[in-house]
Length: 106
Length: 124
Figure (tube, helix red, strand yellow):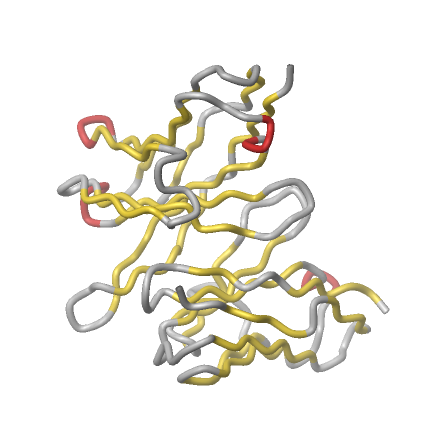
């Protein structure tokens, strides 16, 4: 199985900050990676697929990059509604989520 | 509007059986997969399995193989997740999600639309 490791597990930031979350795969997954946002009590929401393609309706402050085994999700200017938990997921071979990164208010 | 509507919260006793549902609407149900994801209280997302309604092809995560059964009734655009004998450790939120294929052969599936989830509580 391909394992996905996210870092950090928790991130404290302020409104307006630039935030970067990293996701590492245990072997190459090309660009078959998605990012999801989950708010408390809500279902996950797709943000980015194929490592860097923004899902329709998702604000452009969200950017995904990477290929192979290292990927990043960047929020260029953190907004109040962005405080949430973020998950990466590989869909290259079977499916596997990262353990999540909680973005909390500093 | 594309929607996945999941069945309501369940409270069961250990050893009981359960089948929860996920009904798709607003799209061609047989053209996409349906995946199931578990989220235990306070924990992360775990991929359980996927079914392709067009041909009922089903794949399970090794962690859930033999523990649950995923099925579909395409005549009513509904996918199911079932347990034959629940355990307390099955208490969790369960999400279904539409799986959209990409890649040259459409063989790489990510989850683009999610249901709101079904809470399952197993307690004696």
